Amino acid sequence: MKFYDADVLIVGGGLVGCALACALKDTRLQVTLLDSREPAQTWDAQTWDSRIYAISPASRRFLTAIGAWQHMDATRLQSVAQMRIAGDDGRSELAFNATDAGTDELAQIVESRELQRALWLAAQAAPNVTLIAPAKPSALHDESDGMLLALEDGRRLSARLVVGADGVQSWVRAQMGIEDKTTSYEQWGVVANFDCEKPHLSTASQWFFADGVMAWLPLAGQRMSMVWSCNDERKQALLALSPAELCEQVAQAGQGRLGQLQLRTPPAAFPLRLMHVADLARPHLALIGDAAHAVHPLAGQGVNLGFGDAMELAKVLAAQAPTQCGDYLVLRRYERARRENVLLMQGVTHGLQKLFNNTNPVLRLMRNTGLGLTDQWVWLKNRLIQHAMNA
Ligand SMILES: Cc1cc2nc3c(=O)[nH]c(=O)nc-3n(C[C@H](O)[C@H](O)[C@H](O)COP(=O)(O)OP(=O)(O)OC[C@H]3O[C@@H](n4cnc5c(N)ncnc54)[C@H](O)[C@@H]3O)c2cc1C
Image 1: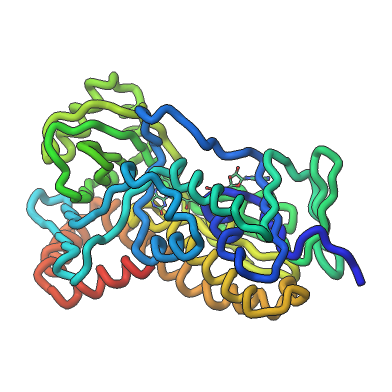
Image 2: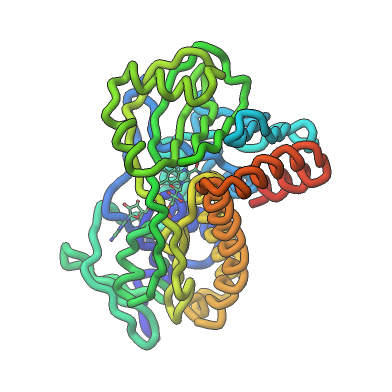
């Protein structure tokens, strides 16, 4: 019988790859998690990560079930009890309230590095998970009965299944020749954190403008994190501003809702794209997280979609004997289960981006009227909240 170094070899120990390793902790599978860098475990507590996520209640339940949420520093968490979305006519608004939907919170706002630390700790504690980091792969070979991964340091690892969790520029995807269809939104996500003069009252706000979308997510304490999805011209203008000018401009764009702002974390910009991949699964191979899809961040669902992948793949693999984990028929179950959810989320965020990033006056009237009508339609609002919370 052939010996394998691992049943499941996960390439990429970011949030999603790490979550999959943790989700496999109570199975009979031997799991290896490999990353080209080891995540930071300590930092100056006075600083805040500029990468912030809105974690849906479904993702939070998953992160708790796999033993990661328990490692989070509670003083850095912030729940969202309310959400306000403003149209670009200065009047239309849609407000969601957790209590109206019979729940305590719509989402939890967390720092990327803090969640990464918690997941890494949970993976370290799993007896069937081996962590290899930092280590860089150099070649991936598809053998008839599994995969062989060569590392730059000369090591070779065999596995029944390789999972590509190595982000939007996935090396695994490229090595296996899986095509991706990527469309640039010709927009950037400009992110920065601020101290605020007024309390945020656990409210997340979003403003649609003619040339983009700005979101303010409440952070623990009197702070907020901004994601401004905008065109190249505005991105360059925002990044060129002095800290005081940036605070002034962001505060003004948000109608002074949180009073005066003070910059806490310097602004950074990320390109925004939509990406579909041809296959989520092949014999002995599966893709998860950003390696499998990219969405516009206006719904804050990118990492939640990735956690959905990890949850589903772990469920499918746990139901099989370890020897079967690379079988294409097994992996197809994962692909079928995820394809629809991913397409739905990509369709919704893409449609919203196109609807709002448009100067056509008829569309402008429709979108703002739509926001106002949805706000008055309680049943529809509650359905939308339930859908977002379970995403
Ligand atoms: C501006 C912006 C704002 C966003 N806001 C939100 C939000 O509010 N909510 C939300 O849910 N999502 C948001 N997203 C999306 C979110 O960032 C991603 O969906 C998420 O980070 C994907 O996680 P991942 O683990 O799949 O990939 P990554 O986070 O990209 O992790 C990939 C891992 O693989 C490793 N790796 C890469 N290449 C290799 C290699 N060759 N070998 C070994 N290891 C490798 C990397 O070191 C890394 O650890 C946002 C994105 C942007 C751009």
